[in-house]
Length: 120
Length: 288
Image (cartoon, rainbow over all chains, first blue to last red; front, top):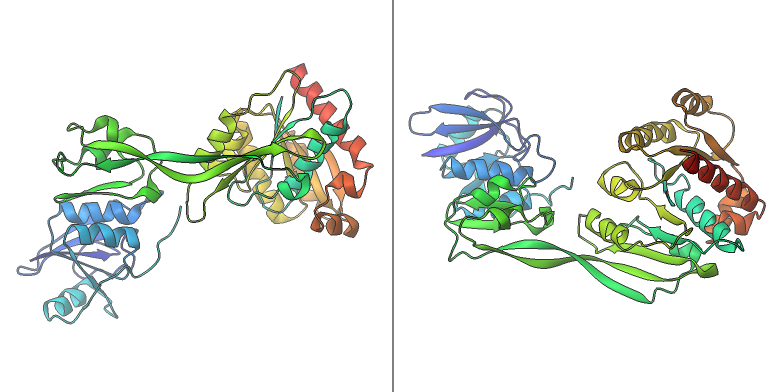
Protein backbone atom coordinates (compact mmCIF):
# COMPACT_ATOMS: atom_id res chain seq x y z
CA UNK A 1 0.00 0.00 0.00
CA UNK A 2 1.22 3.48 -0.83
CA UNK A 3 1.04 6.12 1.91
CA UNK A 4 2.42 9.65 2.43
CA UNK A 5 4.04 11.18 5.49
CA UNK A 6 4.98 14.80 6.20
CA UNK A 7 8.69 14.85 7.07
CA UNK A 8 11.53 17.32 7.57
CA UNK A 9 13.76 15.64 4.93
CA UNK A 10 13.50 12.83 2.36
CA UNK A 11 14.19 9.21 3.43
CA UNK A 12 12.72 6.76 5.89
CA UNK A 13 14.91 7.89 8.77
CA UNK A 14 13.77 11.49 8.45
CA UNK A 15 12.23 13.24 11.42
CA UNK A 16 8.50 13.69 11.18
CA UNK A 17 7.20 17.17 10.37
CA UNK A 18 3.99 17.71 12.35
CA UNK A 19 2.63 20.22 9.82
CA UNK A 20 0.74 18.88 6.83
CA UNK A 21 0.27 21.89 4.53
CA UNK A 22 3.60 23.49 5.34
CA UNK A 23 5.69 20.48 6.33
CA UNK A 24 9.04 20.46 4.43
CA UNK A 25 8.70 17.13 2.59
CA UNK A 26 6.00 14.71 1.58
CA UNK A 27 7.47 11.23 1.72
CA UNK A 28 5.76 8.53 -0.37
CA UNK A 29 6.27 5.11 1.21
CA UNK A 30 5.33 1.72 -0.21
CA UNK A 31 4.54 -0.18 2.97
CA UNK A 32 5.09 -3.56 1.29
CA UNK A 33 8.58 -2.93 -0.07
CA UNK A 34 9.52 0.00 2.21
CA UNK A 35 10.66 1.92 -0.87
CA UNK A 36 10.45 5.69 -0.49
CA UNK A 37 10.27 8.74 -2.67
CA UNK A 38 10.72 12.20 -1.11
CA UNK A 39 9.06 15.26 -2.65
CA UNK A 40 9.40 18.88 -1.47
CA UNK A 41 5.94 19.86 -0.22
CA UNK A 42 4.38 22.13 -2.89
CA UNK A 43 2.35 23.87 -0.17
CA UNK A 44 5.36 25.21 1.75
CA UNK A 45 5.54 28.60 0.07
CA UNK A 46 1.85 29.09 -0.74
CA UNK A 47 0.55 32.45 0.47
CA UNK A 48 -2.71 30.73 1.31
CA UNK A 49 -4.33 27.37 0.69
CA UNK A 50 -1.18 25.41 1.60
CA UNK A 51 -3.21 22.49 2.95
CA UNK A 52 -5.23 22.26 -0.27
CA UNK A 53 -2.13 22.35 -2.41
CA UNK A 54 -0.51 19.62 -0.34
CA UNK A 55 -3.73 17.59 -0.43
CA UNK A 56 -3.93 17.96 -4.21
CA UNK A 57 -0.39 16.58 -4.44
CA UNK A 58 -1.27 13.67 -2.14
CA UNK A 59 -4.33 12.80 -4.21
CA UNK A 60 -2.33 12.95 -7.45
CA UNK A 61 0.14 10.41 -5.98
CA UNK A 62 -2.73 7.91 -5.68
CA UNK A 63 -1.94 6.93 -2.11
CA UNK A 64 -4.40 5.39 0.32
CA UNK A 65 -3.43 7.13 3.54
CA UNK A 66 -1.61 10.17 4.92
CA UNK A 67 0.18 10.48 8.24
CA UNK A 68 0.85 13.90 9.74
CA UNK A 69 0.63 15.77 13.02
CA UNK A 70 -2.17 18.08 12.07
CA UNK A 71 -4.92 18.43 9.46
CA UNK A 72 -6.61 21.82 8.97
CA UNK A 73 -10.21 22.16 7.79
CA UNK A 74 -9.39 22.67 4.09
CA UNK A 75 -6.87 19.83 3.94
CA UNK A 76 -9.30 17.60 5.81
CA UNK A 77 -12.18 18.36 3.43
CA UNK A 78 -9.98 17.80 0.39
CA UNK A 79 -8.50 14.50 1.58
CA UNK A 80 -11.85 13.24 2.78
CA UNK A 81 -13.47 14.08 -0.58
CA UNK A 82 -10.80 11.99 -2.27
CA UNK A 83 -11.38 9.10 0.13
CA UNK A 84 -7.89 9.19 1.63
CA UNK A 85 -7.54 8.09 5.25
CA UNK A 86 -5.75 10.40 7.67
CA UNK A 87 -3.66 9.33 10.66
CA UNK A 88 -1.84 11.21 13.41
CA UNK A 89 1.80 10.77 14.40
CA UNK A 90 1.08 10.68 18.11
CA UNK A 91 4.54 10.50 19.70
CA UNK A 92 6.38 8.98 16.73
CA UNK A 93 9.67 10.75 16.04
CA UNK A 94 10.81 9.30 12.69
CA UNK A 95 9.07 8.29 9.48
CA UNK A 96 10.24 4.68 9.95
CA UNK A 97 8.69 4.51 13.41
CA UNK A 98 5.41 5.92 12.06
CA UNK A 99 5.28 3.45 9.15
CA UNK A 100 5.87 0.55 11.52
CA UNK A 101 3.12 1.68 13.86
CA UNK A 102 0.85 2.27 10.89
CA UNK A 103 1.44 -1.30 9.69
CA UNK A 104 0.69 -2.56 13.20
CA UNK A 105 -2.59 -0.58 13.17
CA UNK A 106 -1.47 1.50 16.12
CA UNK A 107 -1.92 5.03 14.76
CA UNK A 108 -4.96 7.11 15.59
CA UNK A 109 -7.13 7.88 12.58
CA UNK A 110 -8.68 11.32 12.09
CA UNK A 111 -12.43 11.88 11.71
CA UNK A 112 -12.46 15.70 11.86
CA UNK A 113 -10.04 18.60 11.29
CA UNK A 114 -7.48 18.76 14.11
CA UNK A 115 -7.23 22.56 14.09
CA UNK A 116 -9.21 25.53 12.90
CA UNK A 117 -6.95 26.66 10.07
CA UNK A 118 -4.89 29.75 9.54
CA UNK A 119 -5.36 32.87 7.49
CA UNK A 120 -2.87 34.60 5.27
CA UNK B 1 -7.45 65.59 -5.08
CA UNK B 2 -7.19 62.34 -3.17
CA UNK B 3 -5.36 62.24 0.14
CA UNK B 4 -4.86 58.85 1.77
CA UNK B 5 -3.95 58.49 5.45
CA UNK B 6 -1.92 55.43 6.40
CA UNK B 7 0.61 54.49 9.05
CA UNK B 8 1.96 50.99 9.04
CA UNK B 9 1.59 50.49 12.78
CA UNK B 10 -1.96 50.48 14.08
CA UNK B 11 -3.16 52.94 16.71
CA UNK B 12 -0.89 55.83 15.73
CA UNK B 13 -3.76 58.21 14.97
CA UNK B 14 -4.73 57.69 11.33
CA UNK B 15 -8.42 58.11 11.96
CA UNK B 16 -7.85 61.03 14.35
CA UNK B 17 -5.93 62.87 11.62
CA UNK B 18 -8.20 61.82 8.74
CA UNK B 19 -11.43 62.84 10.48
CA UNK B 20 -9.94 66.08 11.83
CA UNK B 21 -8.69 67.06 8.39
CA UNK B 22 -12.08 66.25 6.85
CA UNK B 23 -13.83 68.47 9.41
CA UNK B 24 -11.38 71.34 8.79
CA UNK B 25 -12.09 71.21 5.07
CA UNK B 26 -15.86 70.91 5.62
CA UNK B 27 -15.89 73.96 7.89
CA UNK B 28 -14.02 76.08 5.37
CA UNK B 29 -16.40 78.47 3.59
CA UNK B 30 -15.01 78.30 0.09
CA UNK B 31 -14.45 74.61 -0.44
CA UNK B 32 -16.99 71.87 -0.96
CA UNK B 33 -17.35 69.44 1.94
CA UNK B 34 -14.97 66.54 1.26
CA UNK B 35 -15.74 62.92 0.53
CA UNK B 36 -14.57 60.75 3.41
CA UNK B 37 -13.95 57.04 2.80
CA UNK B 38 -13.28 54.69 5.70
CA UNK B 39 -11.34 51.87 4.01
CA UNK B 40 -10.54 50.02 7.24
CA UNK B 41 -13.31 47.59 6.37
CA UNK B 42 -12.33 45.02 9.00
CA UNK B 43 -12.84 47.51 11.82
CA UNK B 44 -14.12 50.87 10.57
CA UNK B 45 -14.38 53.50 13.29
CA UNK B 46 -14.36 56.93 11.61
CA UNK B 47 -18.16 57.05 12.03
CA UNK B 48 -17.62 57.50 15.77
CA UNK B 49 -16.02 60.89 15.06
CA UNK B 50 -17.94 62.10 12.01
CA UNK B 51 -21.40 60.83 13.04
CA UNK B 52 -22.87 60.08 9.63
CA UNK B 53 -26.44 58.98 9.13
CA UNK B 54 -25.80 55.92 7.00
CA UNK B 55 -28.86 56.01 4.78
CA UNK B 56 -27.68 53.96 1.84
CA UNK B 57 -26.55 50.36 2.09
CA UNK B 58 -25.34 48.20 -0.75
CA UNK B 59 -24.10 44.63 -0.45
CA UNK B 60 -20.74 43.69 -2.00
CA UNK B 61 -19.79 40.24 -3.16
CA UNK B 62 -17.38 38.36 -5.34
CA UNK B 63 -18.24 35.79 -7.98
CA UNK B 64 -17.24 32.30 -6.93
CA UNK B 65 -17.22 29.18 -9.11
CA UNK B 66 -19.90 26.49 -9.04
CA UNK B 67 -18.93 23.21 -10.67
CA UNK B 68 -21.44 21.18 -12.64
CA UNK B 69 -20.29 17.67 -11.72
CA UNK B 70 -22.30 16.20 -14.63
CA UNK B 71 -20.14 18.05 -17.15
CA UNK B 72 -16.84 18.06 -15.22
CA UNK B 73 -14.28 15.58 -16.55
CA UNK B 74 -11.90 16.23 -13.62
CA UNK B 75 -9.17 17.29 -16.01
CA UNK B 76 -7.67 19.54 -13.35
CA UNK B 77 -7.27 22.65 -15.49
CA UNK B 78 -9.16 24.82 -12.97
CA UNK B 79 -6.98 23.73 -10.05
CA UNK B 80 -3.89 24.28 -12.14
CA UNK B 81 -4.77 27.89 -13.05
CA UNK B 82 -6.05 28.94 -9.61
CA UNK B 83 -3.33 31.05 -7.99
CA UNK B 84 -5.06 30.82 -4.60
CA UNK B 85 -5.68 27.04 -4.41
CA UNK B 86 -9.37 27.78 -4.04
CA UNK B 87 -10.37 24.88 -6.26
CA UNK B 88 -9.02 21.33 -6.12
CA UNK B 89 -9.64 18.30 -8.29
CA UNK B 90 -9.53 15.27 -6.05
CA UNK B 91 -9.98 12.12 -8.05
CA UNK B 92 -13.60 12.17 -9.19
CA UNK B 93 -14.54 15.29 -7.23
CA UNK B 94 -13.91 18.99 -7.79
CA UNK B 95 -14.06 21.01 -4.58
CA UNK B 96 -14.37 24.80 -4.26
CA UNK B 97 -13.06 26.59 -1.17
CA UNK B 98 -14.97 29.91 -1.20
CA UNK B 99 -12.87 31.44 1.60
CA UNK B 100 -9.75 31.30 -0.56
CA UNK B 101 -11.39 32.43 -3.80
CA UNK B 102 -10.46 35.93 -5.01
CA UNK B 103 -13.22 35.90 -7.65
CA UNK B 104 -10.78 36.30 -10.55
CA UNK B 105 -12.79 34.07 -12.90
CA UNK B 106 -9.78 32.19 -14.35
CA UNK B 107 -11.25 28.75 -13.64
CA UNK B 108 -14.54 29.64 -15.32
CA UNK B 109 -12.85 31.15 -18.36
CA UNK B 110 -10.42 28.28 -18.86
CA UNK B 111 -12.66 25.26 -18.16
CA UNK B 112 -12.59 23.28 -21.44
CA UNK B 113 -15.94 21.64 -20.67
CA UNK B 114 -17.84 24.85 -19.72
CA UNK B 115 -18.64 23.06 -16.49
CA UNK B 116 -18.10 26.10 -14.25
CA UNK B 117 -20.60 28.90 -13.70
CA UNK B 118 -20.33 31.75 -11.21
CA UNK B 119 -22.49 32.75 -8.31
CA UNK B 120 -22.23 35.89 -6.16
CA UNK B 121 -20.96 35.33 -2.63
CA UNK B 122 -21.63 38.24 -0.29
CA UNK B 123 -18.58 39.41 1.67
CA UNK B 124 -19.75 42.69 3.10
CA UNK B 125 -21.55 45.97 2.62
CA UNK B 126 -20.90 49.57 1.62
CA UNK B 127 -22.70 52.25 3.60
CA UNK B 128 -23.07 55.91 2.74
CA UNK B 129 -24.66 59.06 4.11
CA UNK B 130 -24.09 62.68 5.13
CA UNK B 131 -21.90 63.32 8.18
CA UNK B 132 -21.00 66.39 10.27
CA UNK B 133 -20.81 69.64 8.28
CA UNK B 134 -22.05 67.98 5.09
CA UNK B 135 -19.17 65.53 4.68
CA UNK B 136 -20.05 62.85 2.10
CA UNK B 137 -19.26 59.81 4.25
CA UNK B 138 -18.74 56.26 2.96
CA UNK B 139 -17.44 53.15 4.60
CA UNK B 140 -17.03 49.48 3.86
CA UNK B 141 -17.83 46.76 6.35
CA UNK B 142 -16.54 43.24 5.90
CA UNK B 143 -18.86 40.49 7.10
CA UNK B 144 -17.65 38.57 10.15
CA UNK B 145 -15.73 35.47 9.10
CA UNK B 146 -14.92 36.72 5.59
CA UNK B 147 -11.18 36.95 5.02
CA UNK B 148 -10.92 39.23 2.02
CA UNK B 149 -11.10 43.01 2.41
CA UNK B 150 -9.77 44.12 -0.98
CA UNK B 151 -12.93 43.62 -3.11
CA UNK B 152 -14.85 45.94 -0.77
CA UNK B 153 -12.12 48.59 -0.89
CA UNK B 154 -12.04 48.34 -4.69
CA UNK B 155 -15.80 48.86 -4.82
CA UNK B 156 -15.50 51.89 -2.50
CA UNK B 157 -12.81 53.29 -4.80
CA UNK B 158 -14.91 52.67 -7.89
CA UNK B 159 -17.79 54.70 -6.49
CA UNK B 160 -15.74 57.81 -5.68
CA UNK B 161 -16.59 60.51 -8.18
CA UNK B 162 -15.47 63.84 -6.71
CA UNK B 163 -16.73 67.14 -8.11
CA UNK B 164 -14.06 69.59 -9.35
CA UNK B 165 -12.18 70.96 -6.30
CA UNK B 166 -13.71 68.36 -4.00
CA UNK B 167 -11.15 66.62 -1.80
CA UNK B 168 -11.32 62.90 -1.11
CA UNK B 169 -9.89 61.62 2.17
CA UNK B 170 -9.20 57.90 2.41
CA UNK B 171 -8.63 56.41 5.85
CA UNK B 172 -6.48 53.29 5.32
CA UNK B 173 -6.37 50.14 7.42
CA UNK B 174 -3.23 49.52 9.49
CA UNK B 175 -0.34 47.54 8.06
CA UNK B 176 1.16 47.58 4.58
CA UNK B 177 -0.55 44.58 2.98
CA UNK B 178 -3.06 44.30 0.12
CA UNK B 179 -5.92 46.27 1.74
CA UNK B 180 -3.56 49.22 2.34
CA UNK B 181 -2.23 49.08 -1.21
CA UNK B 182 -5.81 48.94 -2.51
CA UNK B 183 -6.59 52.06 -0.45
CA UNK B 184 -3.59 54.22 -1.35
CA UNK B 185 -3.26 53.24 -5.01
CA UNK B 186 -4.38 56.20 -7.08
CA UNK B 187 -3.98 58.72 -4.25
CA UNK B 188 -2.34 62.06 -5.08
CA UNK B 189 -0.73 62.29 -1.67
CA UNK B 190 -0.19 60.06 1.31
CA UNK B 191 -0.15 61.26 4.90
CA UNK B 192 1.83 58.84 7.04
CA UNK B 193 0.87 59.09 10.68
CA UNK B 194 3.44 57.63 13.03
CA UNK B 195 4.54 57.66 16.65
CA UNK B 196 8.05 58.04 18.11
CA UNK B 197 8.61 54.40 19.05
CA UNK B 198 10.74 51.63 17.48
CA UNK B 199 7.53 49.89 16.39
CA UNK B 200 6.19 53.09 14.83
CA UNK B 201 9.43 53.62 12.92
CA UNK B 202 9.69 49.99 11.82
CA UNK B 203 6.28 50.09 10.20
CA UNK B 204 6.77 53.63 8.86
CA UNK B 205 9.77 52.28 6.96
CA UNK B 206 7.60 49.58 5.36
CA UNK B 207 4.84 52.06 4.52
CA UNK B 208 7.38 54.49 3.03
CA UNK B 209 8.74 51.69 0.83
CA UNK B 210 5.23 50.85 -0.37
CA UNK B 211 4.53 54.48 -1.32
CA UNK B 212 7.83 54.67 -3.16
CA UNK B 213 6.93 51.53 -5.15
CA UNK B 214 3.58 53.08 -6.00
CA UNK B 215 5.09 56.47 -6.81
CA UNK B 216 2.90 58.40 -4.37
CA UNK B 217 4.39 61.50 -2.71
CA UNK B 218 4.19 61.30 1.07
CA UNK B 219 4.67 63.37 4.21
CA UNK B 220 4.79 62.44 7.88
CA UNK B 221 2.73 63.49 10.87
CA UNK B 222 4.31 62.55 14.18
CA UNK B 223 1.65 61.90 16.78
CA UNK B 224 2.22 61.63 20.54
CA UNK B 225 5.55 63.36 20.04
CA UNK B 226 7.55 63.61 23.25
CA UNK B 227 10.96 64.30 21.78
CA UNK B 228 12.53 61.10 23.07
CA UNK B 229 13.07 59.18 19.86
CA UNK B 230 15.45 61.04 17.50
CA UNK B 231 15.79 57.94 15.27
CA UNK B 232 12.39 58.78 13.78
CA UNK B 233 13.52 62.28 12.76
CA UNK B 234 16.78 60.84 11.36
CA UNK B 235 14.83 58.44 9.21
CA UNK B 236 12.57 61.16 7.83
CA UNK B 237 15.52 63.47 7.08
CA UNK B 238 17.61 60.77 5.45
CA UNK B 239 14.78 59.59 3.20
CA UNK B 240 13.54 63.07 2.35
CA UNK B 241 10.11 62.56 3.93
CA UNK B 242 8.88 65.98 5.09
CA UNK B 243 7.58 66.16 8.67
CA UNK B 244 4.38 68.15 8.21
CA UNK B 245 3.09 68.27 11.77
CA UNK B 246 3.99 67.20 15.29
CA UNK B 247 1.26 66.57 17.81
CA UNK B 248 2.57 66.39 21.36
CA UNK B 249 1.74 63.60 23.77
CA UNK B 250 -0.97 65.19 25.91
CA UNK B 251 -3.50 63.65 28.23
CA UNK B 252 -6.24 66.05 27.15
CA UNK B 253 -6.03 64.76 23.56
CA UNK B 254 -6.15 61.11 24.62
CA UNK B 255 -9.18 61.77 26.79
CA UNK B 256 -10.97 63.65 24.01
CA UNK B 257 -10.35 60.97 21.39
CA UNK B 258 -11.60 58.35 23.84
CA UNK B 259 -14.83 60.36 24.03
CA UNK B 260 -15.25 60.36 20.25
CA UNK B 261 -13.90 63.88 19.62
CA UNK B 262 -11.64 64.88 16.76
CA UNK B 263 -8.44 66.82 17.31
CA UNK B 264 -10.09 70.10 16.37
CA UNK B 265 -13.02 69.47 18.70
CA UNK B 266 -10.50 69.03 21.51
CA UNK B 267 -8.05 71.80 20.60
CA UNK B 268 -9.45 74.15 17.92
CA UNK B 269 -5.98 75.61 17.29
CA UNK B 270 -5.16 72.45 15.30
CA UNK B 271 -7.55 73.71 12.66
CA UNK B 272 -5.01 76.25 11.41
CA UNK B 273 -2.22 73.73 11.58
CA UNK B 274 -4.12 71.08 9.63
CA UNK B 275 -5.19 73.65 7.05
CA UNK B 276 -1.57 74.65 6.57
CA UNK B 277 -0.68 70.95 6.13
CA UNK B 278 -3.41 70.81 3.49
CA UNK B 279 -2.06 73.93 1.77
CA UNK B 280 1.42 72.42 1.68
CA UNK B 281 0.01 69.27 0.10
CA UNK B 282 -1.84 71.34 -2.48
CA UNK B 283 1.28 73.33 -3.33
CA UNK B 284 3.34 70.19 -3.54
CA UNK B 285 0.99 68.25 -5.78
CA UNK B 286 0.24 71.22 -8.02
CA UNK B 287 3.92 72.12 -8.25
CA UNK B 288 4.74 68.71 -9.74
